[in-house]
Length: 282
Ligand SMILES: [Zn+2]
Ligand SMILES: [Zn+2]
Image (cartoon, rainbow, N blue to C red):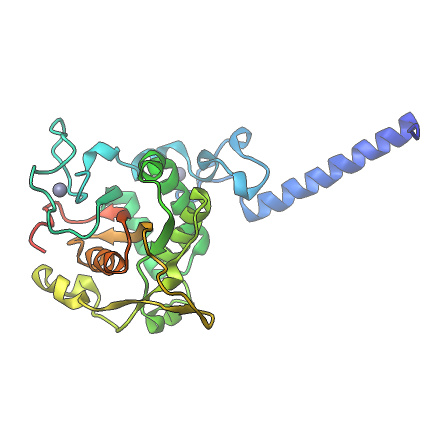
């Protein structure tokens, strides 16, 4: 074994220090030590060295985290409707959601305030980093529900390719699905669901017509990169990602399609639940 002289050892130590300082600087430049949502400084001590292991509190300050996440028991377990405080029995009403193709909707918050601002920014700006941050917040906030569901894969509500092209190829739910899949350690199967036709944005359609607007709007891909895949969702437990849901018509249509194609269960991971009423008339 070669004996390293004390001066040499010191030189090596300084070198390593410089390297780690450089790495630290590079990380600082890409992921500054500020809250991704409000720009307030976040404590350095809570920041891990690699992006992969960044704890959620390093990405977002405590205040924003509290504002952006509502407790799980604010929402109906089955349809995601807002439940009156102190009244929580799991469901918004005993007969909730007999007709839904999905098994549960798990929103992170109501569509208002900070989450609304974030969703609008994701819709109008192509910001994959923000989508990634939001995915991490969702995962941290709903980890228990997601893991209890025991998912096999994650799928995003797809965007029409023309609309996606206009947005620089970024569809926030797809970015979120990819990150959630990575966190859950299951495949992201978003590319297996595609839009079969362009639809009017649901926000531009009367509530009562929204189910019709998306009827038959989605298809399952039978081949990926030229390779045939016979039954991609057979027996799969699917996490379906969307940003804001109002009537639930879109996620219900995709859940129906997934079930038709053999999916065993569908968990709707929604950033926000808009509209305070139930979605029982679909
Ligand atoms: Zn903040
Ligand atoms: Zn309900």
